Image 1 (cartoon, rainbow, N blue to C red):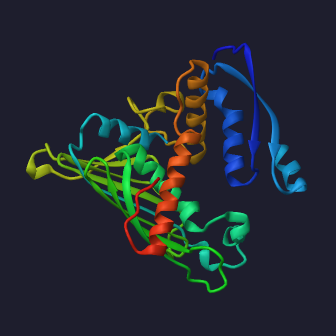
Image 2 (image 1 turned 180 degrees about the horizontal axis):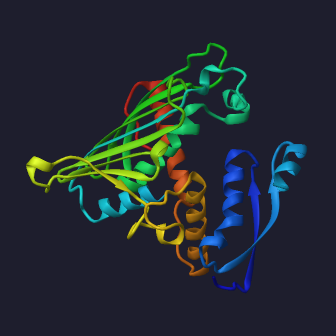
Image 3 (image 1 turned 135 degrees about the vertical axis):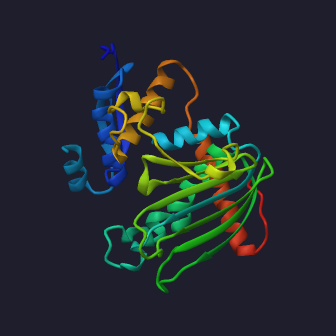
Length: 286
């Protein structure tokens, strides 16, 4: 491994699940990658001081999907479908019950889950030009939406469907997408994050079917930095790869995505869905 000469001070907001995932990446990244910086975990911010102190003391398949799409392997895109399904919404005593309160969460499943699906869709299939949506709150006293369904028009001419809910009984964390084009199709499910389903229309008719690609190398993004081919990676490794991409862009003065500008565009899409739910019409983000 290299010996970085520059120190980068790190400040992190939040100490919950995502805080642990990101802080683990800060600590582990140099074990797998040559870094341009020595990371100094300097500041962590949160709402609860005692929990904050406790915390302070403590995905390659999608990258391949984007590569295949950018190479034109699926041809002209026709359909993009995405669901983000969880089932904990019916439990009023869940540790995540703060997400039901508008003052703390801002919005419900729309901001919590749909935002991830929209962000990934824009990355893989390009800009969304207009949306229409429907929300539902199943628990009467809940202050935010429990489920959302949205339709989308993409700038490339394809259409999209999105569903996000906390009431998908039997689904723990199904973050799933599929994209269909004139030459092929790609499917991915976060609950099986080492695998990518790829259909190639150029295959001979009698053997056509989805290829179950185990994205652990050789030749797959990031994998040469972790384990030998066939040895699966875990959820935490995806955060390490993302962090290293960011540090590399920072060191070479290159743009990094997703950035704050990207987040603003996704927020515009969420607001457009929200306005559509209220008006019952198609809405363009602005």
